[in-house]
Image (cartoon, rainbow, N blue to C red; front, side, top):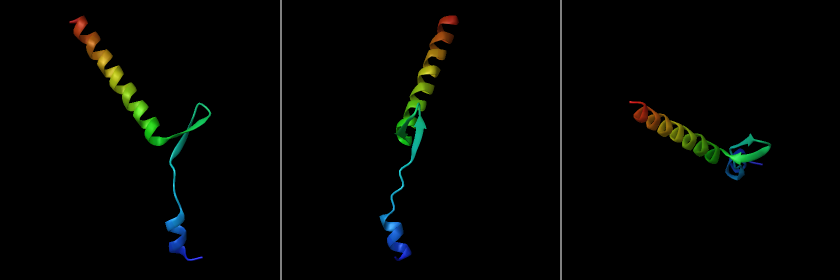
Length: 51
């Protein structure tokens, strides 16, 4: 088998194990970003109320 043929037929799927399930890296990254944005919004709202 030619090495170039092997590279063309090979697909890499990035997954992570999260709570015993394999999920796509993009989904996991989006959840982390969403949680960080929600925490930042909550912190800024709390700061506004405190002032």
